[in-house]
Image 1 (cartoon, one colour):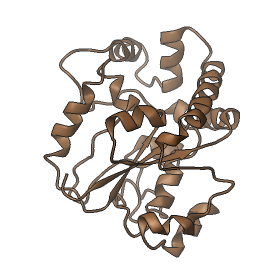
Image 2 (image 1 turned 135 degrees about the horizontal axis):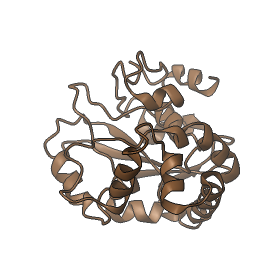
Image 3 (image 1 turned 120 degrees about the vertical axis):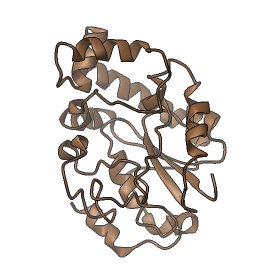
Length: 244
């Protein structure tokens, strides 16, 4: 992958993982996915509404390279299309075709440090800790409202996973179905209560497995200038993301 390095931000859903991704992209050795869909700088938000998620959660961004190519997803966000870890080999084959910058590339995921380390032994993993109930409340107003009709061209296998079959069934009756709608369709339980349980369990696991991460941090005690030893000089404009 040329000189590219992976900077994986692991967080609970609704914990502000993409906001931290933008903040870390203010370091000189971290690549920013500069594009009108994301914002030309990490501290400037999207210039259009082409990424629907960014109209719901303003810090959201996609992994778009300067030439317009997209970096594929990792972890459970793509594994649900496969029902197996075989997504990783497909991910590798795609990454080998991309012209990647010699910098850290950020990925925002909702997994666990041990799971991530099993696939990416050389990655720099940031374990973002947050209050699980507050994160769930924020999730209900942001990512719970995200669409589920992603095409994921080139990233999906030639069969339909359980998640894909369920999403297609739901979309056939509700073309605007969201993550929350699909949860309730698949699990027949209230999404808010289910996510609260899921985030609480994930929070315990993130604490338990923090030794698999390079650093564990939270927004309340964030000392960004201490991270310059890992990622180079921090642009002062990062402060715009701290107060928005």
